[in-house]
Structures are given as structure tokens and as C-alpha cells.
Length: 161
Image 1 (cartoon, rainbow, N blue to C red):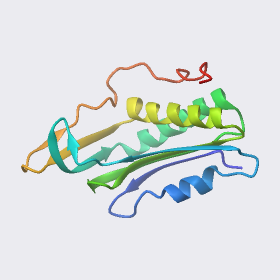
Image 2 (image 1 turned 90 degrees about the vertical axis):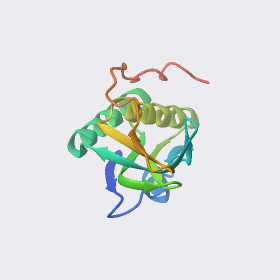
Image 3 (image 1 turned 120 degrees about the vertical axis):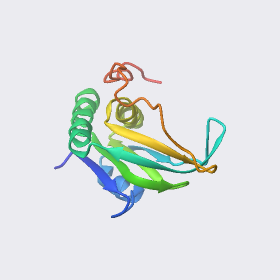
């Protein structure tokens, strides 16, 4: 049984599909499924946004996603199923940028695994975002990719909220 699915989806070739993520992490023995879906928003730091462009170092990002999945599996049990997919290319407001889903026997592990995975994707992946604004300007986001933060590998492992 495959325990994790990691993908980069070029927007020119297809779209992210939350239903595929749900199907992948579903199992008759799982009572908990958690999902995070990130969308392009229309306003950032007071500026009207018309879209974003994501540039991704695919091979490195996919290896990183697999490492994230392995850490989540180590922290939340061998029955965890994890789905991580990120869009690449020019996205419009409302388009899906990232989908992360986790399925486990219990809800607590599903919530924590999903949260850990999306935080690690945001903080460790070689993904760069350029925002495009209504005034015609564009700027690269000062996001947290590769910014030197410590990984959040076990940041949520000890919490049971």
C-alpha cells in the first residue's frame, strides 16, 4: 500500500484536485481525515492581487515532500496516509495553490499530521511566489521558503489539543 502521494502540478497541464486527495487518504479503518486547501487571494498587504506565479525546483521539492511525509509517518504512526500537491505556473485569484490531506485512524493525528505537513511545505520547500497586482506591478513574495527557519518536524507531535 502506498502511504503518501507527492506532486507538482503545472497549471498549464491540469489543476489541483481536492477530491483526489480525499480519495487517496481515505480508508475504511480511518476515522479522521483532515485537509488544507490554499487558494490565491485577491488582497495581500493592502494591495489588490490579480494572480500569482509559482516557480518550483520540481525534483528538490518532490524529494522534500517525500521527506516531510516520512517525518509525519514517523511521528503519527504507520497507518498515516498523506497527500501533498502544489501548483506551478501562473494562477488566478481563486485558483488552488496547494492541497495537503492526511488520513489516520483518529482525528487528532489527522489534524496534527496535516498541520505539520503544510507548515513544513511552506517553510522548507524550494517554491517561489511572484504576486501580480491590479496596478500592473509584480513582486516576488518574501515568503518563508528556504529562509533559515528550523523545520517543524515535531512541533505538533507533543500536543494533544
